[in-house]
Image (cartoon, rainbow, N blue to C red; front, side):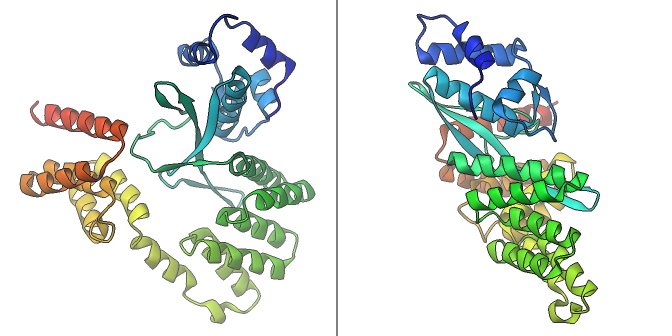
Length: 325
């Protein structure tokens, strides 16, 4: 997070008489206009100075850079962890769960969210401000995964240990630690790490799969048989995960499938405006206007955030416009 001399010189080029908020506004405008351009690279989790120098990084790298610059200017900035649709890749048998962090800036006119790298970012995504240590723990974890892929076991361990120290409650970090232990033949430690991951998050399917595999390899599969099936069943009933599955179905035009999924959970999380809104627009697509109206009214009654309400109204306007074409 350290500010380099190059970053300081860049900030010093901003008008000296401008207020911190005016300087920040100019910096963000340069960022949005492409005058301060950064190439997006999912796998490049870099220190602030290197992100600035190479003009390259993922959402976390760029968010760290902007946070450091905002604070240097004199603007209050915090990390904001966002619940985005679950996305997972497998890289040489290492499972990587992507998490998203953006920037929340406090300005006299209100809060400003600066987001980088999520094409389908939605203002309705659940989010929460997190301390710096949470963002930095993700920084160490991301780089540890890169070390795992390249076989740099010792460095991966040091980075994962740091990530766990900063955020011991993050289930995914324990999964990655378990993968590392398994790679170096420490199967008992790997088992303990996967169990810890599941204790922290009983919906962590990657942890369940890894634990079941290690147990089978050790000849103890009978002790935890059906673990993956049990976790999959829990995930199928989790409102948050079902929401994203239904959202994907809706965007693919599979409205009946989206409605079937939503019916399974909408009453279990009756205070989640996202489920009601998605049910409302899905029912509208299916021309069930009575149910659509009921769920849309419920969604707007539950929303407290003005920006989310504004976004919902815009989506409804666009939906009605497209339906009338």
